Image (cartoon, rainbow, N blue to C red):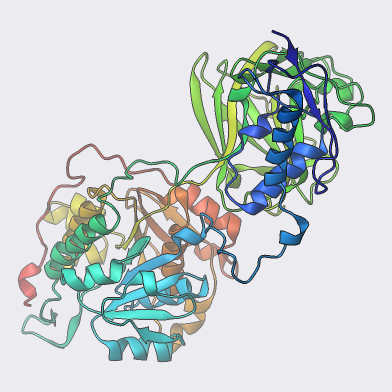
Length: 621
């Protein structure tokens, strides 16, 4: 049974102008060499991008089954297939009665319920969520208080939801309120309906009067035990029901990957050469480059006088990046592919590689629309010798480099316009530092697929406070007397009850983030300049940080955590860096803040022991 290659040379957006086969198609076994045909095509834009790429370059079409149709029928089926991928030019503008486009991943996670939305931090959480385009529902105890604080003070449009409505009916640009209480399961369930996440910023309500002990009392139903010991666990139980009982616990990704290259469709058949005058992928940029996997070109150190050599070749069910690294000269091997039009991956968090390596460290190179010359973005990943693994490389880990030197103050990579993707094995990491997992000589990296992934986000963000764990550690009067004032007092056992509700969140099985702000700055006129001056923020874990933070800054941490994969299943403290007055948090600062966090270790038991409630007798409900 003979093997034939079908070469597609048609220009993009004009349909398929010509199709040629090297021999008779009847009952011939066709082999697919292009990883592009493994792409999952979800939307019209993706179909157009794929079709442009498929027909702009030379591609060897591969099939693993025996084709039994006559030659003409088979070619007609290929034409029909590509025409389905390329919408007619008259369809560029959707008609008025056309169905709406499917929501992308980002749009699917824009509905949030806030509990405690009129509190010191909660009001800023609500206003910032609205400003960022979220659909927001606030569970409030008083519509009048919500109108005053969220409407008058925060300048938001406040709209009560109708009976039976929840976050599903909320719209961006305003805050919708539901009258209820955290302990009222009916109102909580109503507000949660259709929500993707919940932010809990509840606090205790203190009476204006003081009792005989000189301490303020709590309003009825607002003791630390009522709020943190009963209310928050009740909220978490409702969230478990609303979000499916925490069935996504431990999930690294949200939804399906967007497949870029599915090399599992490859076979070890020899590659076909490009037609005369046709560009052969990225290899055309290097004279004499041999392309073994269609669309990928060799970029070894020979371009700078080196003698290393490599190839990205097809194998059965995978692509193999292999060769010989020689340190004389440049000391690197690379294979790269270019996209005919910029690829929009902004709805995703990074790249997912399914690989089997040799225990060495490799790099990925990306270029966006602004990359010129040798400027590009680079990130590393390690492999295990002889074992398959999934390497997840966030876009936030890609650093700007030029000639292997870091480019400081460069903007982050623009994932909306990715132009090229390359795989590199080098004796250097960056800035002249050696690659500790590099050995000269032969190397081999097997690649099953390369895709874009979207990581999971927190389903619950809990606003706690610093010192809750510190209080749990101070178990003797002597230890407590040497600690910070709030630990010495622990009024009403508030720190102990906050720790208790943290544990309820951590044990829920939901994806969570527990934010522990340090001391909250007041809002008096005398401190207005201090409060409103921007600072960089720093995070820590283990409850060792002390310091100050403003309420808007604490709120910003909670809002950003909702869209931060690195914040999933973490507990951390956050404070101002007082030495950075005047500097504002930007994209890379937020990535660094969450990127240094480590997930909590959950071993099936309560994380912290119970401790006495210091001075609890002085508080009467």
